[in-house]
Length: 88
Image (cartoon, rainbow, N blue to C red; front, side, top):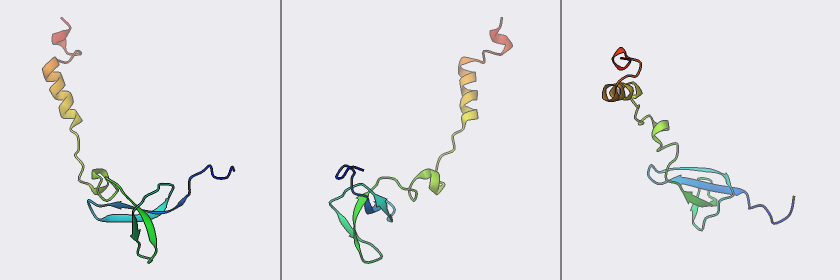
């Protein structure tokens, strides 16, 4: 590998401030801000908008789309091209 080509791969804390969730992992992202982690060491911190702790899919707060209802409303509005009324 060429030297000084790849970014530094180091421990970084990702934090979701909306729910107070944070996790330590490794990343190449850089940050000017730091945080003291549970192990007493200081790591760069990156704030994220959405994490698994706040995303509706993972928390179970997601909406279930009523696709069957949408199809029925479409058929009522524009008609069903397969129906006998439209074949004549």
